Length: 426
Image (cartoon, rainbow, N blue to C red):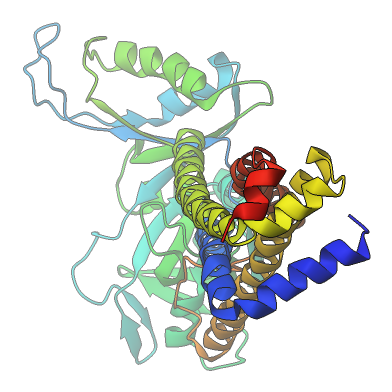
């Protein structure tokens, strides 16, 4: 490894055949370059998608009522039904795995057209009825005022919390909205806060920026919803699976509303934990595909190097014969060939790694620049394309391995050359 004469021979061989050496090394360069770029792009896609869930409760789920699909106990199929307040209380009390449960009302269709009015300003926005517990499922910050609280629920107060877009439309920039009144579908509600979601990419039933939030009980009473619940969100306790808790909730709803236990469509559900699990498998599949393509390209580059090494050995047959004749053993010949092969693959691979890293860095700079100039409403699903130290170490190990494999077959052929035959070779 540290034989000066050996390295001089390697550099002389490369200088004599510069074009051949460059073309030989290009296969390895391209393989590592593509592996780095594809892996970084996969990480960028994964970072962008998971960024939308950074504060959202991943141990959560949502459930709602759908029309029945099976006739049961005298009721025809296709029957509509609704979740009610008693269901929520019973689920909270009887299902051990439930940590937080938050019923919701979706009132965006209370009135067509412009349903939110303040003075001469009017606009059409979503209206939702919520509990304070919902903040534990979908956390938010409050640029102005406070979130709906338990006192609002208990006394059915006519107060409201608004999204960022509602504030922009209904109030002047910098104006304090707290204590001001909005007319929501003809009824006045006092603004107690402005909500800014920590997870703007996730919208369950509404666009959060364009929504007016009322206390759940006040909305039920004011707009004659009775005890109806449109849907509810839950989080589960540590050590419990969301899917198992959902399975515990379904029998309660089926029994209370006379729904067939075999009716799989009557209760809608959205399991956030299961969705994230599926996404993990998806990204795992993408990463496996990237590595398969990258390693396949790397093997193709190794085959090219191996073929070139065979040509080099043929050209240097007489030289190898002289080395054998003056006492050079098989280890010396094998070491020389393997060193040259590993050197070519390693240099080419490190250049590919460097170029790939530079490309990802430039892409990341472009993304940062576009974010700086983008509107706050713009969404991105590609963020921080990068490769870490584990990939660099894995690439180094692969390069050394590929170099050894590429040089092994030519080396075996070289040591089978008999000195007397090599000296006669032209």
